[in-house]
Amino acid sequence: MTGLIDTFFNLQVMLQYLPKVIEGMGVTILLAIVVVTSGLALGLALGVLRSLQIRVLNALIVLFADVFRAVPPLVILIIVYFALPTVGVRFSGFASAWIGLSLVLAAFAEEIVWAGILSVPRGQWEAARSSGLNFAQSLRLVVLPQAVRLTVAPLTSRAIVITKNTALASVVAVGEILYQAQAGYSFSYNPSPLTLGAIAYLILFIPLVWLGRWVETRFAWKR
Amino acid sequence: MEALIEGFFNLQILREALPYLAQGLGMTLLLSIVAVPLGFAGGLGLALASTSRSRLLRWSAVVYTDLFRAFPPLVLLLFVAFGLPFLGFKPPPFVAVAIAFLLNTSSYYGEILRAGIESVATGQHEAARSTGLSRWQSLRWVVLPQAVRNVVPDLISNTLEVVKLTSIASVVALPELLYAARQVQSVTYNASPVIAAGLLYLLLLWPLVRLLSRYERTAVRIR
Image: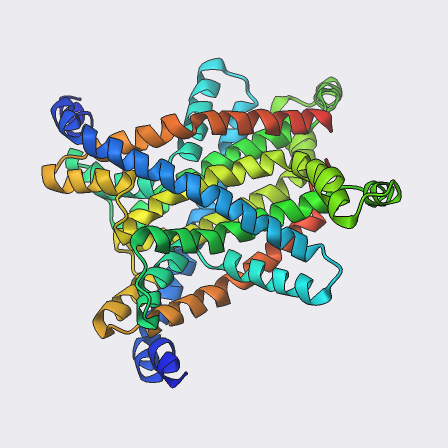
């Protein structure tokens, strides 16, 4: 038992790497915030653009959404970070993770927003238009407010999934929690830094899991 | 344009890479075939536990689910792959990946199946019992078939996520598709293999993505 504690909860090693892991938590939080903000914004914009019903544009949006929903996020990060430089486009690890994960979130968000817009009965559009509102006004004042309610639960759960994917950024050398924990593990050859990293993730994500559970019951899609 | 083709769609390099990519794809498929049923079975167990009459079982299922949904899968994988050897058990990469996937995906399948079971009206169970079926029989023949049917879109969506997730096995050097592609990339200094891997994932998973969009749209129309 003491062996187990020495191995996985070695206080000395843990204290040594605690500052690094805390620094990593900051990076994880920052990355999560920028990814969720830009991903949701782009997804919302694409979903709204799709309601304009411009054929070529819609085909492009569907293609984008399909590609970024089908290809694993890690593959996308690796393409952005390791493959783009071979044709002269170079991003830092953080920027690669930001771009890659934002695009993935945007693809899922677009589909959710579009499904939400579709769920608003046609009559709402027609009524809004015939009461003198123009297209943008009906969208903004009548359709979107009704669509949004339905999209809250799935958007939240997607956003939570993507924040967990920030751990993938460790592969492209972003100094977030997992990267710091792994570095600590390989320097000390003791898994305690990994334990520390795991605890850091629990602190950040248990509340998010609970939030997701609450939102799911509060804004459940009615089947 | 020429540089782009040279760098991303280099036929000569792709011809050399093809056998490795094919092998990697085989491993990705094998891993998916192992991980999906394993996760589903684990999830079914969790769902049954979380809807059982025993409070202890219910609570253990909730704690398990929340715990393993809070860890990013990559963190779990590294913890299993690097931590277990310190307990005197050095699993081959495939086993490490399978364990990590069981822990992670079973909690997601569990949540989905629990929602499915809860969506079946209690009257169904009562009617089944009163026609003389045992509790097990009523679960097996009446409740579960309806429960699973009610959550088919979520099950497909999660299965898509699991297959995509197999790409993280590359981080612990399991030679699946992404790993194979990166190996060839590092030898040839050319990104074509990684791009090809991305396209293979796309081809493999596109049908699932399309199916999912169809389901989302019908779900909206029914409402």
